[in-house]
Amino acid sequence: MKNVEFLGYIIQNEPVAESIYLGLFALQHRGQESAGIATSNHDEIFYKSDTGLIANFFGDFDINQLKGNIGIGHTRYSTTGKEANKTPNLFRFLEPMEK
Image 1 (cartoon, rainbow, N blue to C red):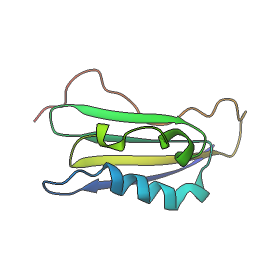
Image 2 (cartoon, rainbow, N blue to C red):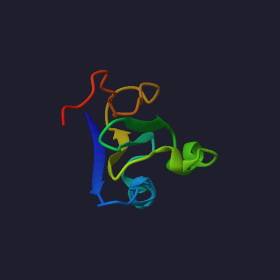
Image 3 (cartoon, rainbow, N blue to C red):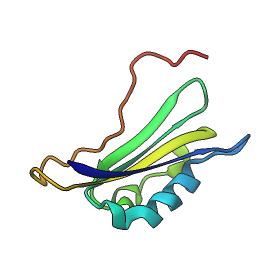
Image 4 (cartoon, rainbow, N blue to C red):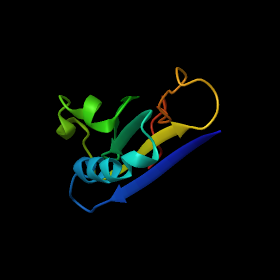
């Protein structure tokens, strides 16, 4: 079992990555094992996910690489199982989304 907090944003004509990052930072107490953000510009999906605290793995990462006005983010805290298996929950789709 695991605790996972998700949040999502859709902002017309504005990038959402920074808003999602700030939201995840506020939710960090709900899950400190891993986190991730995925955004889309309707043609491509951009994502960054990793284990650990959000500030640690987004620290040197340019948040502007996560382009798009639609996005989701998550934090994760496992309540059972080994901490070593604390992979982020964002999934990557290999096929493009239909419009």
